[in-house]
Length: 146
Image 1: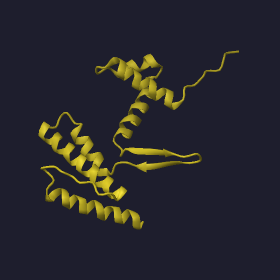
Image 2: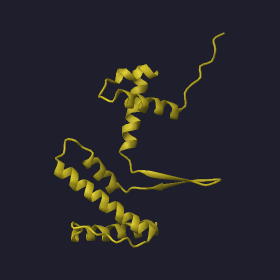
Image 3: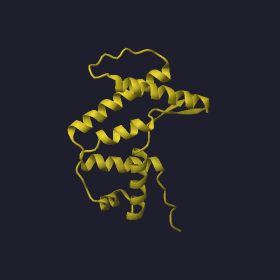
Image 4: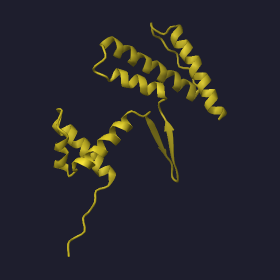
């Protein structure tokens, strides 16, 4: 009789993919994933899943003795800004503006979440950011009322 295969867990497969990406360090054909035991169809599924997850808002896990709480760390706006500043096809100015917007939105959402006043001292904090803060406040109120 043949010995039963030890199937890798999902986390083991994901780690193998990212270890290979780190090791190769340069763009490489998908066929290289065969070196870690992924056939082309499985590799496609994994790559689609990874790309999908990377486009989603970031989350944070808070583990207690009995429960794991999932907290959304970014809003959709953060995700959109992150996609822009990570896009090498965009100009440096567009990427910088997106990074600035991302940071401002992140600070504002953290202030709203924690209800702690954090003084912001920056030369570019203008009326636009104040309007965004008001919109985020309204969104937060809507989320609470649901």
